[in-house]
Each structure stands twice: as structure tokens, then as C-alpha cells.
Image (cartoon, rainbow, N blue to C red; front, side, top):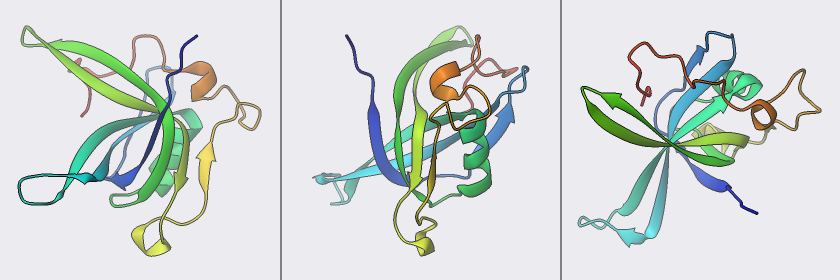
Length: 147
């Protein structure tokens, strides 16, 4: 038995990028910053980690329509590791694939109540948890992740 579950609370680092795969499945990607006040950098600021977030299908549309840079979010998902080759050099990257996403914080910070969880039976088709990314991953002519 194995468990692959990630929970993050942080701020969106840039406006989400929405695209569609060749089969028409929506995909939204954006970065999320989390800070750990227990660990400080040399200037005394909290250590910040950046996470590459990926949402599929109806969640991708939700992210495209409602999330913007600075929005504070709660994200539950799975961690995925992948690689690609560029100029003969193998590059590695990590992504968090969204299962549940919710706004947190005040409305002034872009948050508020609400969110989107793909529970399968509530959607009109298979969701990210049921379907996953299409075979072959994200369509990208440059053959590299958009982050």
C-alpha cells in the first residue's frame, strides 16, 4: 500500500496559464509559494519554497476563471516527478497535480470562501482523479514543461 498526498497552503506566484491538449482536455499551470517561518534565510526572512501546480479538466477551467497572482489557496494533490531532454541534457522537474483546491484568507487578498473539488459524481465527465493526464503528458512543441 502507498500514499501520495500533498497539502499546501500558499500564495499564487503568477497568473495561471490555461491551455488544451490535442484531445481537448483543459490544463492550467501556475506556481504557488509556501513559507516556513521556522527557517530563515541570511536576511532573516522566512524560507520560501516554490511549487509547480497543475490542474486538469473542470478544475483547470476553475483556476483559469477565478485564480490570479497573489490569491491565497489550499491545495490537496499528488506529487509527480518527470523529466525531459533539452540540448542533450536531461532536466528534472516536480509538479503537484490538484485533487482539491480552495480559497483561503480574506477577500482582499484574493481569497474568500469557496473552491473546487472534483469528486467524480459531481462532474459531467471523468475528473483529474479519475482520468489523470492524457498519455504523453502536456502537448508542447518545445518538449519541455512550461515552468
